[in-house]
Amino acid sequence: MLILLLIAGYILPAGAQKFALVDMEYILKNIPAYERANEQLNQTSKKWQAEVEALNQQAQTLYKNYQNELVFLSAEQKKQREQAILDKEKEASDLKKKYFSPEGELYKKRESLIGPIQDEIYTAVKGVAEQRGFALILDRASDNGIVFASPTIDISNEVLAKLGYSK
Image 1 (spheres, one colour):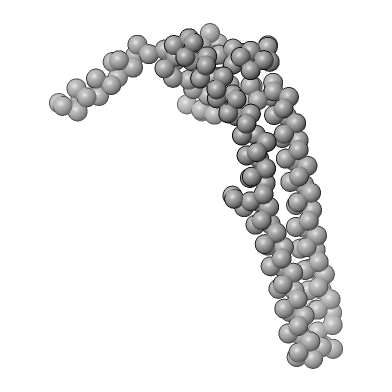
Image 2: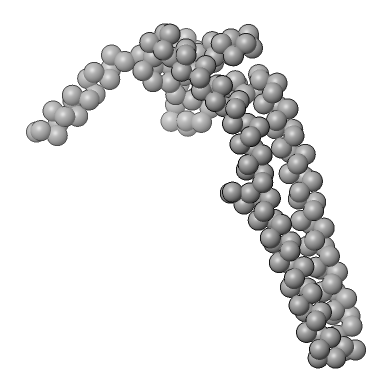
């Protein structure tokens, strides 16, 4: 019984709260700086991926050469060639980790390019929420639980206007 009262105590006041929706995908598509940042990240990612693939290709070439020359190599030469192959594979793996791991260079670059844009959007959303008295704002682009939402509660264009990108 006490639990029902506690739940009712939280649910009933929540019904009086004002809420709104934003579409973050729509907002981001209408911010040119975001598109430029994404393009820069894509170019950097492709460049770094090519570097990793080049090292992997070198390791494969070393391995093929090793396979072709295996019968002519002494035990010491075999050991050296095998170590060279392992070293090249490790170099490729280390470079991939350096660039693409969760703490890697691409993540840091994404944070430096996209982070300020996201902060600016958050500040604009917060400003609209405070100005209009919204207690909750949901992102309709990322929440699959929204089956229908009235366009009248979507404040995406207000957020864009606050950011200086009128629609």
